[in-house]
Amino acid sequence: MTDALSPNTKAILLLTAPLITGRSKKSSDLLTPGEYKKLAKHLLELGAKPADFLAPAADQLLGDCHRVIDKARLERLLARGFLLSQAVERWHARAIWVVSRADGTYPQRLKARLRENAPAVLYGCGDRKLLESGGLAVVGSRNVDDALIEYTQEIGRLAASAGRTLVSGGARGIDQAAMRGALETGGRVTGVLADSLEKTAMQREHRNMLLEDQLVLVSPYDPSAGFNVGHAMQRNKLIYALADAALVVSADRGKGGTWAGAIEQLETLHLVPVFVRTTAGSSAGLDALAEKGALAWPEPVDADGLAAAIATPAPEHRPPADQGQLSFPPPRDGAGEVREAGTPASVSPASFPPADQRELLAADELFSTVRSLVVRLVRGPTKAAEIARGLGVTGPQAQKWLKRLVEEGVLEKNKKDARYSISQARLFESEGAREPAAKTKPAGTGE
Image 1 (spheres, one colour):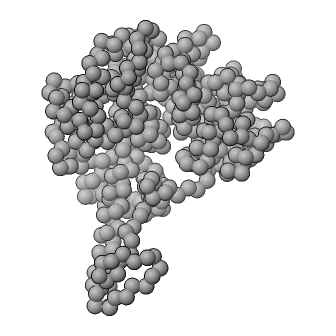
Image 2 (tube, rainbow, N blue to C red):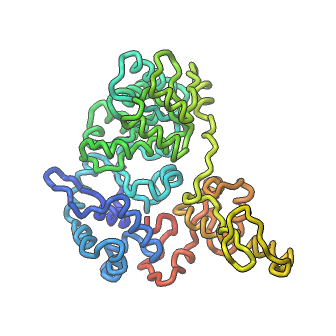
Image 3 (cartoon, rainbow, N blue to C red):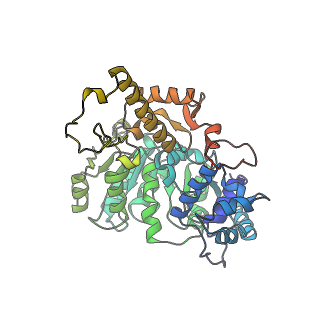
């Protein structure tokens, strides 16, 4: 399925994608993921979207973005229209689809879990619905012995028999063994590739699986891009984000992509429970991951056992203050001076308002903080449970705040899927916001 590119996706591709078509050279002007993140945030503040760069009257917007990205650089990138048309023609001929964060068809799992760190563009081949099916991620080293290959293939077969999608990275060794075991047993597989999407999708062994919606291959990198260590490291978070649980079959302690991806999940992302193999012949790498918080894989022998393992809840994690946890201003004394926490305030009772007014002022201050944090957290349609997790509060408490924010017009609630989005009015109320060329959905604006 190769739908026509949306205007937003065209603009994002022009700004960020190398558009490799055989002999073309990668532009040195391309925006890095960090630069595009800043630009997307600035567009959101302006009430604009990437597609507005392609409008006839885009010069004003380009000027408005000059302090974030040099105007001349943006103009050079946006002038690559012919190269984009060549790339799109090549992708369509190979049944490769492209979506951006601004599209409604972008995988919601990635957007909800990784938020602004989700890839701006995702390339793929196969049934996109598999990307929302969760399942078991299986990862490991490239160079392993035959016994581990057979063990991993059996895990893939077990996932297939349990009706759960197998998620892996498509690399030689453990990744390919897990995927092969699931596919040969009639299971479903999501392959998250760091390179060579086009070449992999064209391989005869994959074509029927792709056509029969048994396999989907995705990559945040150009379909013709070659191997890059940095890319291999960065795509690991996508493997975990698309799964419900992860099993590390093998890892080298302190080095390699498998180790780096598992450590990032255990220490930073906390998206899913991470298991390590517990059969004979364990390793220093697996033991070290266990010390970091990885769980012992229960080594299930049937579909029910596997389903139970996948259903294990992820360890509790309260995000740090800079990632959405509530933070409060430092305590002050009666004169307004900051005092150290735990130091009693030397003020007279007269310096405080009455008790009922103090409670009202505190509640208003708290809700003001909550309002700003929720606006920061909701970058696309978001479930109440995800917002509660980001705020570090209980579900019922989050529901009360969300109801009030809807009543205030800050949020809109989609009654069909119970997800919350920033209201259209809120998107354009910023000082200096420019009028949009046409009415657009709030979800994904500027993404």
